[in-house]
Image 1: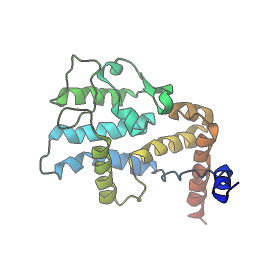
Image 2: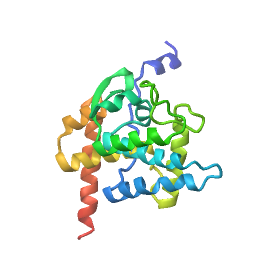
Image 3: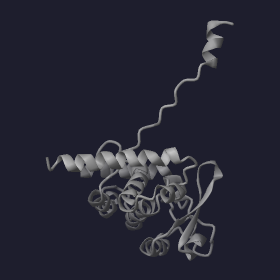
Image 4: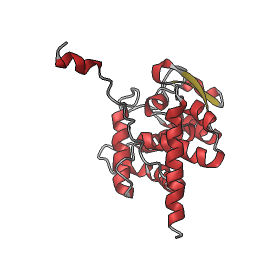
Length: 209
């Protein structure tokens, strides 16, 4: 057997991609309030788009969604207090939709000039061409927001999903429920949040030493 053939038989260790650092609650709410202003810095600004960005960030944080999952939410789904989310591998899960966020989404539908309110399968979050919002557009908005507020380099839309999990874990400690809400197939993926939470607690404690 040749040396290069042997190489294919050797299992390389699987390294977990490091999670973005979760924002604290104060920073999270500051980001949600400030994200509206990013649209005002653009040349071809549209007033509804800033509100759209705020509502999208609130949804990602309050329901623990991936950006792709949030952008797939349709108008017809807003009749309920829960969202049926299809995540990785077409795995389906149910997540709560907060009343405040639902009301904001309904307001966005009224504000957006491109929304077809009669089409229940239409997407809630649209771009300025009337099509489903491109994730890259929102990622750029969050990047500008990160620089504006002086947040860490890992502050992406996904960091707000991590913040949801970390804050929920701090308050409830119910890791199985969090696994279900996040749509993780393996509990070990969710357990990574316990390490982050313990580290955050130790950092907070060290400030009083």
